[in-house]
Amino acid sequence: MSDRTWRAPNRGARMLFGFDSLTFDTDQQGTRFFKEWNTGKSFSQAWQDAALSIFHDNHRVSSAACGATDREAQDRLWNERLFFGEAVSDNWYWWRWAGQFPIEVALGIPVPHQPLSLRLARRRADNDTASALAEPFGLRGTLARTASPTSEEASARTEFEPRLVLHSDGTYQAFYAEPDRAARSRAPEEIVELADREVRRLDLGHDLALAGMSATFHAGAGRLGDTVAAAVADYTLHYRQVYDGIPAVAGGDGQLTVTLDPAGRLCSMSDTTVPILGVEEARPPSPEDTDVCTALNAATTARAECLGPRARLAVVPDSRAIGFRFDGDHAALVARQTIEITGDRFRIRDIVEVTV
Image (cartoon, rainbow, N blue to C red; front, side):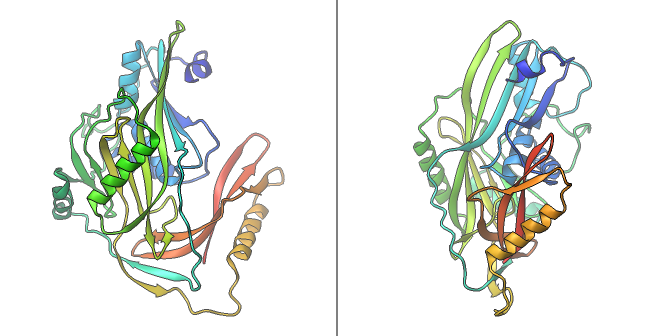
Protein backbone atom coordinates (compact mmCIF):
# COMPACT_ATOMS: atom_id res chain seq x y z
CA MET A 1 0.00 0.00 0.00
CA SER A 2 1.24 3.47 -0.87
CA ASP A 3 0.63 4.91 2.62
CA ARG A 4 2.66 2.17 4.34
CA THR A 5 5.54 2.50 1.87
CA TRP A 6 5.79 6.30 1.78
CA ARG A 7 4.45 7.41 5.19
CA ALA A 8 7.88 7.86 6.82
CA PRO A 9 9.87 9.52 4.01
CA ASN A 10 7.03 11.64 2.59
CA ARG A 11 7.52 15.33 3.26
CA GLY A 12 4.69 16.72 1.17
CA ALA A 13 4.75 14.84 -2.15
CA ARG A 14 1.63 15.46 -4.19
CA MET A 15 1.69 12.38 -6.44
CA LEU A 16 3.71 9.24 -7.17
CA PHE A 17 3.91 7.27 -10.41
CA GLY A 18 5.31 3.84 -11.13
CA PHE A 19 4.46 0.14 -11.40
CA ASP A 20 3.51 -2.38 -8.77
CA SER A 21 4.84 -5.29 -10.81
CA LEU A 22 7.78 -6.24 -12.98
CA THR A 23 7.80 -3.86 -15.94
CA PHE A 24 9.47 -3.34 -19.31
CA ASP A 25 12.60 -1.44 -20.29
CA THR A 26 11.20 0.91 -22.93
CA ASP A 27 12.04 4.38 -24.16
CA GLN A 28 8.44 5.01 -25.22
CA GLN A 29 6.85 5.71 -21.83
CA GLY A 30 7.80 9.38 -21.64
CA THR A 31 6.83 10.20 -25.23
CA ARG A 32 3.52 8.41 -24.92
CA PHE A 33 2.81 10.06 -21.56
CA PHE A 34 2.92 13.51 -23.12
CA LYS A 35 0.95 12.35 -26.16
CA GLU A 36 -1.82 11.21 -23.81
CA TRP A 37 -1.51 14.29 -21.58
CA ASN A 38 -1.93 16.62 -24.55
CA THR A 39 -5.43 15.25 -25.14
CA GLY A 40 -6.49 16.90 -21.86
CA LYS A 41 -5.99 13.95 -19.52
CA SER A 42 -4.86 14.13 -15.91
CA PHE A 43 -1.36 13.04 -14.89
CA SER A 44 -2.51 9.67 -13.57
CA GLN A 45 -4.70 8.90 -16.59
CA ALA A 46 -1.95 9.86 -19.04
CA TRP A 47 0.61 7.75 -17.14
CA GLN A 48 -1.70 4.75 -17.09
CA ASP A 49 -2.81 4.98 -20.72
CA ALA A 50 0.76 5.46 -21.93
CA ALA A 51 1.90 2.30 -20.12
CA LEU A 52 -1.05 0.19 -21.25
CA SER A 53 -0.65 1.34 -24.86
CA ILE A 54 2.77 -0.34 -24.82
CA PHE A 55 1.78 -3.54 -22.99
CA HIS A 56 -1.57 -4.23 -21.36
CA ASP A 57 -1.03 -7.84 -20.31
CA ASN A 58 2.44 -7.98 -18.79
CA HIS A 59 2.69 -5.24 -16.17
CA ARG A 60 0.57 -3.21 -13.74
CA VAL A 61 0.87 0.56 -13.85
CA SER A 62 0.06 2.56 -10.71
CA SER A 63 -0.32 6.14 -9.41
CA ALA A 64 -0.97 7.60 -5.96
CA ALA A 65 -1.99 11.03 -4.66
CA CYS A 66 -1.95 12.63 -1.20
CA GLY A 67 -4.33 15.04 0.47
CA ALA A 68 -5.61 16.38 3.77
CA THR A 69 -8.87 14.43 3.28
CA ASP A 70 -9.93 11.44 1.24
CA ARG A 71 -11.83 13.78 -1.08
CA GLU A 72 -8.79 15.98 -1.69
CA ALA A 73 -6.57 12.97 -2.41
CA GLN A 74 -9.12 11.54 -4.84
CA ASP A 75 -9.58 14.87 -6.58
CA ARG A 76 -5.83 15.17 -7.06
CA LEU A 77 -5.49 11.59 -8.29
CA TRP A 78 -8.25 11.79 -10.90
CA ASN A 79 -7.94 15.42 -12.01
CA GLU A 80 -4.59 17.13 -11.39
CA ARG A 81 -2.60 17.81 -14.56
CA LEU A 82 -0.15 20.66 -13.87
CA PHE A 83 3.12 20.82 -11.92
CA PHE A 84 2.88 22.58 -8.56
CA GLY A 85 5.76 23.09 -6.14
CA GLU A 86 3.76 23.37 -2.95
CA ALA A 87 3.86 20.49 -0.46
CA VAL A 88 0.56 18.89 0.53
CA SER A 89 -0.72 16.96 3.52
CA ASP A 90 -0.30 13.19 3.52
CA ASN A 91 -3.17 12.53 5.92
CA TRP A 92 -4.77 10.52 3.13
CA TYR A 93 -3.46 8.49 0.20
CA TRP A 94 -5.58 7.44 -2.75
CA TRP A 95 -4.14 5.24 -5.44
CA ARG A 96 -5.09 3.57 -8.69
CA TRP A 97 -3.57 0.65 -10.55
CA ALA A 98 -4.39 -1.16 -13.75
CA GLY A 99 -3.39 -4.35 -15.47
CA GLN A 100 -4.68 -7.43 -17.19
CA PHE A 101 -8.13 -8.67 -16.18
CA PRO A 102 -8.45 -12.41 -16.87
CA ILE A 103 -10.85 -13.22 -19.69
CA GLU A 104 -10.80 -15.90 -22.38
CA VAL A 105 -9.21 -14.67 -25.61
CA ALA A 106 -8.95 -16.69 -28.84
CA LEU A 107 -6.25 -14.84 -30.76
CA GLY A 108 -5.06 -17.48 -33.22
CA ILE A 109 -2.03 -16.35 -35.23
CA PRO A 110 -1.21 -18.28 -38.42
CA VAL A 111 2.32 -18.26 -39.81
CA PRO A 112 2.29 -17.13 -43.47
CA HIS A 113 4.22 -19.10 -46.08
CA GLN A 114 5.71 -15.89 -47.47
CA PRO A 115 6.71 -12.72 -45.58
CA LEU A 116 4.26 -9.92 -46.30
CA SER A 117 4.37 -6.14 -46.24
CA LEU A 118 1.25 -3.97 -46.02
CA ARG A 119 0.89 -0.56 -47.66
CA LEU A 120 -0.96 1.83 -45.36
CA ALA A 121 -2.93 5.04 -45.81
CA ARG A 122 -2.46 7.50 -42.95
CA ARG A 123 -5.18 10.02 -42.13
CA ARG A 124 -4.42 13.69 -42.66
CA ALA A 125 -4.03 15.59 -39.41
CA ASP A 126 -6.07 18.70 -40.10
CA ASN A 127 -9.26 20.35 -38.86
CA ASP A 128 -11.37 18.98 -41.72
CA THR A 129 -10.33 15.41 -40.93
CA ALA A 130 -10.97 15.93 -37.21
CA SER A 131 -14.46 17.28 -37.91
CA ALA A 132 -15.28 14.46 -40.34
CA LEU A 133 -14.14 11.80 -37.85
CA ALA A 134 -16.06 13.40 -34.98
CA GLU A 135 -19.38 13.91 -36.77
CA PRO A 136 -20.59 10.25 -36.70
CA PHE A 137 -19.88 10.15 -32.97
CA GLY A 138 -21.74 13.40 -32.28
CA LEU A 139 -18.56 14.95 -30.86
CA ARG A 140 -16.55 18.10 -31.45
CA GLY A 141 -13.38 17.39 -33.42
CA THR A 142 -10.11 19.04 -32.33
CA LEU A 143 -6.40 18.70 -33.07
CA ALA A 144 -4.02 17.64 -30.32
CA ARG A 145 -1.97 20.66 -29.24
CA THR A 146 1.47 20.46 -27.70
CA ALA A 147 1.85 22.15 -24.32
CA SER A 148 3.65 21.36 -21.07
CA PRO A 149 2.51 20.82 -17.47
CA THR A 150 3.98 24.21 -16.58
CA SER A 151 2.29 26.07 -19.44
CA GLU A 152 -0.35 28.72 -18.83
CA GLU A 153 -2.11 27.35 -21.92
CA ALA A 154 -3.01 24.15 -20.08
CA SER A 155 -5.80 23.87 -17.54
CA ALA A 156 -4.96 22.79 -14.00
CA ARG A 157 -7.79 20.27 -13.83
CA THR A 158 -9.48 17.92 -16.23
CA GLU A 159 -12.85 19.55 -16.79
CA PHE A 160 -14.57 16.89 -18.87
CA GLU A 161 -15.83 17.83 -22.32
CA PRO A 162 -17.07 15.35 -24.94
CA ARG A 163 -14.60 15.60 -27.81
CA LEU A 164 -12.53 13.81 -30.45
CA VAL A 165 -8.80 14.58 -30.48
CA LEU A 166 -6.84 13.91 -33.69
CA HIS A 167 -3.09 13.40 -33.31
CA SER A 168 -0.42 14.47 -35.80
CA ASP A 169 0.15 10.82 -36.84
CA GLY A 170 -3.50 10.41 -37.89
CA THR A 171 -4.60 8.39 -34.86
CA TYR A 172 -7.36 9.74 -32.65
CA GLN A 173 -9.12 9.43 -29.31
CA ALA A 174 -12.82 9.99 -28.62
CA PHE A 175 -14.11 11.00 -25.18
CA TYR A 176 -17.82 10.43 -24.53
CA ALA A 177 -18.38 10.56 -20.79
CA GLU A 178 -16.66 10.63 -17.41
CA PRO A 179 -16.68 7.18 -15.76
CA ASP A 180 -19.06 6.65 -12.86
CA ARG A 181 -16.51 5.04 -10.56
CA ALA A 182 -19.08 4.48 -7.83
CA ALA A 183 -21.37 2.41 -10.08
CA ARG A 184 -22.00 -1.23 -9.31
CA SER A 185 -19.78 -3.35 -11.52
CA ARG A 186 -21.25 -5.65 -14.15
CA ALA A 187 -19.93 -9.15 -14.71
CA PRO A 188 -16.82 -9.32 -16.94
CA GLU A 189 -18.65 -11.23 -19.68
CA GLU A 190 -21.28 -8.48 -19.82
CA ILE A 191 -18.56 -5.85 -20.16
CA VAL A 192 -17.01 -7.76 -23.06
CA GLU A 193 -20.40 -8.11 -24.76
CA LEU A 194 -21.12 -4.39 -24.40
CA ALA A 195 -17.69 -3.44 -25.76
CA ASP A 196 -18.08 -5.80 -28.73
CA ARG A 197 -21.44 -4.20 -29.44
CA GLU A 198 -19.87 -0.74 -29.47
CA VAL A 199 -17.12 -1.90 -31.83
CA ARG A 200 -19.70 -3.30 -34.24
CA ARG A 201 -21.71 -0.08 -34.02
CA LEU A 202 -18.65 2.04 -34.77
CA ASP A 203 -17.96 -0.03 -37.91
CA LEU A 204 -14.39 1.21 -38.39
CA GLY A 205 -13.87 -0.79 -41.58
CA HIS A 206 -11.14 -3.12 -40.29
CA ASP A 207 -11.06 -6.70 -39.14
CA LEU A 208 -10.46 -6.62 -35.39
CA ALA A 209 -9.73 -9.32 -32.81
CA LEU A 210 -10.14 -9.03 -29.05
CA ALA A 211 -6.67 -9.32 -27.48
CA GLY A 212 -7.51 -8.82 -23.80
CA MET A 213 -9.10 -6.68 -21.12
CA SER A 214 -7.53 -4.48 -18.45
CA ALA A 215 -9.22 -3.00 -15.41
CA THR A 216 -8.49 0.07 -13.29
CA PHE A 217 -8.85 -0.38 -9.53
CA HIS A 218 -8.64 2.26 -6.81
CA ALA A 219 -8.47 2.36 -3.01
CA GLY A 220 -7.53 4.70 -0.17
CA ALA A 221 -6.16 4.87 3.36
CA GLY A 222 -5.72 7.54 6.03
CA ARG A 223 -3.10 8.11 8.72
CA LEU A 224 -5.61 7.39 11.51
CA GLY A 225 -6.22 3.88 10.24
CA ASP A 226 -9.19 4.49 7.95
CA THR A 227 -9.16 2.31 4.84
CA VAL A 228 -11.34 2.13 1.76
CA ALA A 229 -11.53 -1.23 0.01
CA ALA A 230 -10.47 -1.61 -3.61
CA ALA A 231 -13.13 -1.04 -6.27
CA VAL A 232 -13.21 -1.08 -10.06
CA ALA A 233 -13.01 2.35 -11.69
CA ASP A 234 -13.28 1.25 -15.33
CA TYR A 235 -12.63 -1.54 -17.82
CA THR A 236 -10.70 -1.27 -21.09
CA LEU A 237 -11.05 -3.76 -23.93
CA HIS A 238 -8.01 -4.10 -26.19
CA TYR A 239 -8.51 -5.03 -29.85
CA ARG A 240 -5.91 -5.54 -32.58
CA GLN A 241 -6.27 -4.83 -36.26
CA VAL A 242 -6.06 -8.06 -38.27
CA TYR A 243 -5.05 -8.75 -41.86
CA ASP A 244 -5.50 -12.25 -43.30
CA GLY A 245 -5.76 -13.66 -39.79
CA ILE A 246 -2.54 -11.99 -38.58
CA PRO A 247 -2.89 -9.23 -35.95
CA ALA A 248 -0.84 -6.11 -35.35
CA VAL A 249 1.73 -6.62 -32.60
CA ALA A 250 1.10 -5.01 -29.24
CA GLY A 251 2.60 -1.63 -28.53
CA GLY A 252 2.39 -0.11 -32.00
CA ASP A 253 -0.35 1.22 -34.23
CA GLY A 254 -3.14 -1.05 -35.40
CA GLN A 255 -4.87 -1.08 -32.00
CA LEU A 256 -8.32 -0.12 -30.77
CA THR A 257 -9.17 0.34 -27.09
CA VAL A 258 -12.68 0.83 -25.72
CA THR A 259 -13.14 1.99 -22.12
CA LEU A 260 -16.38 1.49 -20.19
CA ASP A 261 -17.21 2.39 -16.61
CA PRO A 262 -18.21 -0.36 -14.12
CA ALA A 263 -21.85 -0.07 -15.20
CA GLY A 264 -20.90 -0.71 -18.83
CA ARG A 265 -21.37 2.82 -20.17
CA LEU A 266 -19.04 3.81 -23.04
CA CYS A 267 -16.57 6.45 -21.81
CA SER A 268 -13.73 6.69 -24.35
CA MET A 269 -12.07 5.07 -27.32
CA SER A 270 -8.55 5.20 -28.75
CA ASP A 271 -8.15 4.27 -32.42
CA THR A 272 -4.69 3.69 -33.91
CA THR A 273 -5.91 1.43 -36.71
CA VAL A 274 -4.73 2.33 -40.20
CA PRO A 275 -6.48 1.73 -43.56
CA ILE A 276 -4.66 -0.87 -45.68
CA LEU A 277 -4.15 0.02 -49.36
CA GLY A 278 -2.60 -3.25 -50.46
CA VAL A 279 -0.25 -6.12 -49.73
CA GLU A 280 2.99 -7.24 -51.31
CA GLU A 281 5.63 -9.87 -50.73
CA ALA A 282 8.30 -8.46 -48.47
CA ARG A 283 11.06 -10.31 -50.37
CA PRO A 284 11.35 -13.29 -52.72
CA PRO A 285 11.66 -16.72 -51.08
CA SER A 286 15.16 -18.11 -50.70
CA PRO A 287 16.40 -21.56 -49.71
CA GLU A 288 18.83 -19.82 -47.33
CA ASP A 289 15.97 -18.17 -45.37
CA THR A 290 16.35 -18.62 -41.64
CA ASP A 291 13.32 -19.89 -39.76
CA VAL A 292 11.67 -17.68 -37.15
CA CYS A 293 12.85 -19.64 -34.12
CA THR A 294 16.46 -19.61 -35.26
CA ALA A 295 16.35 -15.86 -35.94
CA LEU A 296 14.83 -15.13 -32.54
CA ASN A 297 17.36 -17.34 -30.78
CA ALA A 298 20.22 -15.57 -32.56
CA ALA A 299 18.86 -12.12 -31.67
CA THR A 300 18.38 -13.18 -28.04
CA THR A 301 21.94 -14.54 -27.86
CA ALA A 302 23.27 -11.28 -29.29
CA ARG A 303 21.33 -9.34 -26.66
CA ALA A 304 22.71 -11.53 -23.86
CA GLU A 305 26.28 -10.92 -25.07
CA CYS A 306 25.72 -7.16 -24.64
CA LEU A 307 24.92 -7.50 -20.94
CA GLY A 308 27.43 -7.07 -18.20
CA PRO A 309 28.94 -10.12 -16.49
CA ARG A 310 26.67 -9.80 -13.44
CA ALA A 311 23.40 -9.77 -15.44
CA ARG A 312 21.45 -12.84 -16.55
CA LEU A 313 18.92 -13.21 -19.36
CA ALA A 314 16.07 -15.70 -19.67
CA VAL A 315 13.28 -16.10 -22.21
CA VAL A 316 9.77 -15.79 -20.74
CA PRO A 317 7.89 -19.03 -21.54
CA ASP A 318 5.08 -18.92 -24.11
CA SER A 319 5.92 -15.33 -25.08
CA ARG A 320 6.67 -15.84 -28.77
CA ALA A 321 4.32 -14.15 -31.22
CA ILE A 322 4.07 -13.13 -34.87
CA GLY A 323 2.31 -10.03 -36.12
CA PHE A 324 2.45 -6.87 -38.19
CA ARG A 325 4.38 -3.85 -36.95
CA PHE A 326 2.86 -0.66 -38.35
CA ASP A 327 5.53 1.90 -39.17
CA GLY A 328 4.81 5.00 -41.23
CA ASP A 329 3.06 3.99 -44.44
CA HIS A 330 4.06 0.31 -44.28
CA ALA A 331 3.54 -2.65 -41.96
CA ALA A 332 6.16 -5.40 -41.78
CA LEU A 333 5.70 -8.91 -40.44
CA VAL A 334 7.78 -9.49 -37.30
CA ALA A 335 8.36 -12.19 -34.71
CA ARG A 336 9.08 -11.34 -31.08
CA GLN A 337 9.56 -12.84 -27.66
CA THR A 338 9.78 -11.46 -24.14
CA ILE A 339 13.03 -11.68 -22.20
CA GLU A 340 13.71 -11.13 -18.52
CA ILE A 341 16.98 -9.55 -17.41
CA THR A 342 18.13 -9.98 -13.81
CA GLY A 343 21.01 -8.16 -12.13
CA ASP A 344 22.26 -7.86 -8.56
CA ARG A 345 19.61 -5.28 -7.64
CA PHE A 346 17.12 -5.23 -10.46
CA ARG A 347 14.87 -7.34 -12.63
CA ILE A 348 13.20 -6.03 -15.78
CA ARG A 349 11.66 -7.27 -19.00
CA ASP A 350 12.21 -6.37 -22.64
CA ILE A 351 11.23 -7.47 -26.14
CA VAL A 352 13.46 -9.13 -28.73
CA GLU A 353 12.08 -8.70 -32.23
CA VAL A 354 13.14 -9.81 -35.73
CA THR A 355 11.64 -9.18 -39.15
CA VAL A 356 10.15 -12.34 -40.64
